[in-house]
Image (spheres, rainbow, N blue to C red):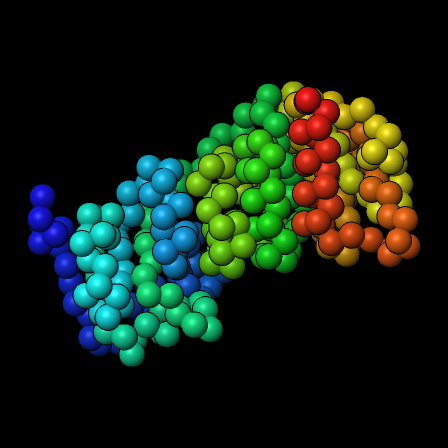
Amino acid sequence: MSPQSVPVTHVTSRDNPLLKNLRKLSQGNAAYRKQGRVWLEGDHLCRAALTRGLKPAIAVFSESFWLLAHAQWAHAAIKNIVVSDPLLPEISGLESPARMGFVLELPVAPELLPDAASVVLDRVQDAGNVGSILRSASVFGFRQIIALKGTAALWSPKVLRAGMGAHFALRLVEGAEADVLGALKVPLVVTSSHYGSFLDSQKLPVPCAWAFGHEGQGVSDELIARASLQVRIAQPGGEESLNVAAAAAICLHASTLTQQ
């Protein structure tokens, strides 16, 4: 198949309808919900999607990059869009715009798996924290993410960039009510800065569902009431608390050690 067999459209006007939609996707946290599509910016995220077997609806390239890389990327998507270089900043969420991106159809929301090792996000609002937790969950084998209402939008551009491709390895249950946790058959473990058993002295259930809470308020009282176990991380240095993403990485790693 030759590169010409995949449709290529050249865009030179900022009033192009596709560019208007891409602006919304790249700069809005929840635009993907309205459009039913997700914007991946940069070759790292694009490669991660392809590695997981995803087929983008559209591949977008800067004109200068397309001249160099069309042979490599020509068949990645169903359709190719080549944008003149001066327009690239308008469809980018980065200070230095990437030379390419993909538009994916928003994955169908999966049903909750009751027996799966899971991570529950309870109103975690910082996009960087959410993306980092998703990456840690993928690294340590927690394949199901249950994002309760109030948590940062999972498919927003900032969360996608912080996740660095972890999204494509996970089951993402988004916008859930706390009541959905009643369907879990694995124990719920909640974290706290000041209460509960110390993590390093506690035998952890395997598998389990770890719950991580709001950056300031922590895990809600409702989730604490549902929990089988409450743990805290020893902080001999004397700081008041850990960043939630750092705490999540420590807790999820501790679960992997329990399995060994």
